[in-house]
Amino acid sequence: MPLHTADALVLRTYKLGEADRIVVFLTADRGKKRGVAEHARGARSRFRGALEPLTEVRVAYFERERRDLVGINYAEALVTPLAAPSPEALGYSHYFAELIDEWAAESDPDERLFRLGVATLEALVGGVAVEPLARYFECWLLRLQGVYPADLALSPAAAGFVSDARRVGPAAAGELGAPAQAIRELEAVHRTLIRSLLDREPRSIRVIHELRRVPAP
Image (cartoon, rainbow, N blue to C red; front, side, top):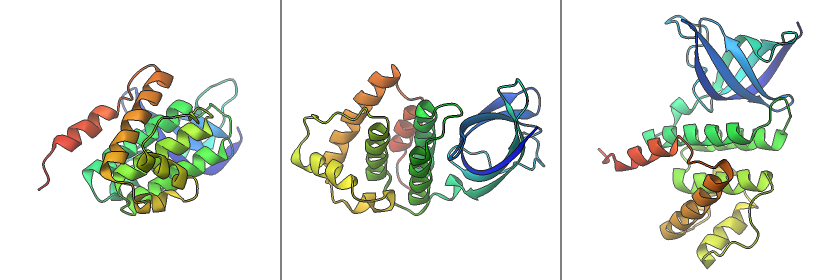
């Protein structure tokens, strides 16, 4: 059973049995993997704090012959969205992870998608405004999949944001200067595109909407 060590992004987890979790994670060199983290739900689990969606981890796992699930030896958090400066930012980390999960292919490396996820996480934790960061992420995710229309009818401000997003990294998304109205316009356009491609609304959208309704302290 070959052992692999890699930096990875946790995309989602779900329960397995009484104490274990299945972890979906993305690596740059071997694509998306699904693995079993044994005893991950225990209070003293060695995986504690490392399995939040969009967490960047150093992971060690081994392949099992004729099995789809790998075995996860350990996962050490490198950058965690739990360090994000606001509940809304943490909510968006689930949104970003869900969309990456939808488009990442099983065992098919996509280094650009991995880099987009890591850079978006770093920008989120670094305090970049979540709304322009989300529109930047959506632009690039759809572009990487080759499904961002070239003929979108956008206002000049929204079109300017899309054009400028090609030239900067996620950390600069909040400095592109698009007014709030243009950001809302792009949100509606991107939401329609994503919904049509997935044939459903992303599950994490509900969390984001609920967080928006919570008044600031």
